Amino acid sequence: DEWRKVGPEGSKGVCCAEMDIFEANREAGAFTAHPCKHPAQAVCEGDEECGNKDTGDVGWCDKDGCAFNTYRLGHEKFWGAGDEYTVDTTRPMTIVTQFVTTDGTDDGDLKEIRRFYIQDGKVIENPNAKALNASSSASAINDAMCEEQLDLFNTSYRGFTELGGLKAMGGALKRGMVLSMSIWDDDFGRMLWLDAEKSKLEEDPQDPGVRRGPCPFDYGTDKDMKEYTKKHGPVEVTFSKLRVGEIGTTTTKQPKLERKYSLTPSMPSAHTSWGPAVMCGIAAAAAMLVVMAGRRTTEHAAAELLLQPTETEACEE
Image (cartoon, rainbow, N blue to C red):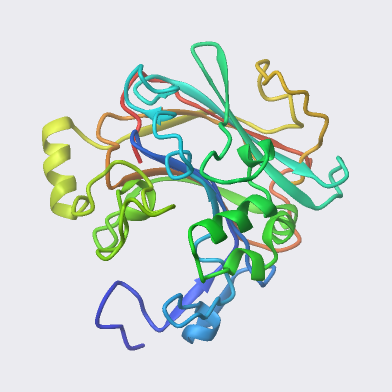
């Protein structure tokens, strides 16, 4: 196959639904739903199938996804390195993700993805998306919140909505997905989508939605990564104590808000620990990827995800 002259992309791709439980470093983080048109992996070819935001082609899978990035949504002091942040990424934490259905049963459609943290024995609620005009329910991912983000950020690409939103994402989770944990960086894109002051040269950091984190636009190349790790040590992250279960069963700590729901997907819980070199331009990620339609990864469909760190080192993706 011919390769494009710019960027690490060929003429074909492999499309599959992706649920990013968490992609983060010590500067910024996000959890993101990426629904797809097809119920299993599919090989795509060309813009119409693979998608191209520049030409307005949505493709078979949502490239951007609907994400909850606390920094981007107005809480620049929620997640970061140091005790001045609500969640201090230099210390261990537990991350719990909850999947709520329309009817409170495992058979209902996925309607909301909720998140809370536990650090030093204290439950920390995910903050409301104060950059939006939505109600208090904007502390979680739901279709209304996702649509309002697109409007506020003046986004013409509407893959999340056009490809079925949370209902489609829940369908993929029901069919069965595999947990993937990794540390990665991108010399081409410099991870600007995650933690940078802007992701394109022409963007204005003062415009809504442009700032994803505090990292400089020109930082994050392979050279930057090597220089940083030479000074600070190897990039590392520890995920431990993965747990899966109905809401309220994976940890004894729960938010004050009573949650009387079951979860749709089969999802594990985990304990996460970040190494000192997980910084701007690097991402430590836990994600669920579709591998086979019609097959579950566990016997129980209702689930709650827990990510919990075990070491007191800097947290960066």
